Image (cartoon, rainbow, N blue to C red; front, side):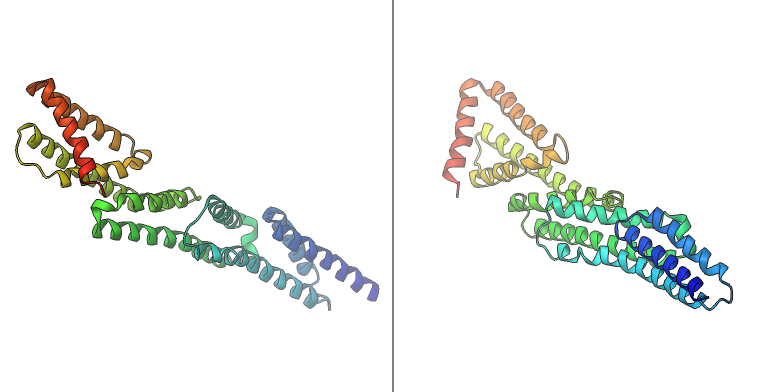
Length: 275
């Protein structure tokens, strides 16, 4: 009898060891196969004295699995405290989401491990990533609202952070509305700058009084927004092309001498009003 008990103990301990090893290496299919064997042994024992021992090991194995998933998430908490995320941070966050997602998809585990608890761990981690994205989005809109004309030089970094986060699995779709809404606001303001520049150029050709300081600020703002072409192709380049075409068209109406004087006037305004 003692020998039989020893065999049961050794077999169960071996299964527990294998289960923990597979779980720690994120081999959840193998984890599922191992805990199934553990449960099968537990079921066969009936009223045997060793049933309680096996049941205890089985229960602790289920707890071990959930703690492992929770630790995968909590170990990355320092990333969310960083002021700036890099590609390595994004890679780690992405790997965690994929790992948690793979645990959710092992159907055979669900008869042993609470799918609700697994989903809760997954959703909580996903919420942390989305919260980071939303905070950046709010900051972009606040800075843009407070100082639109001078914000593009600082907004570039924030937009790039948003794009990095959206490269994480299952994040792109969930952030599409906020991302494109913010991008549309930025592009819309660049179009406003374009109209302002065109109006000022019209005044120059008509030899009316011109606010060269405003022209300088508009051109500087447009220059600082050059990066936006990476995220909305053609916004900057098309506007610059349009401005140049307007200069040429207006110059043709007034003659080459006027064209040169206008270009020289713009150049001079940038020198006179530069910080």
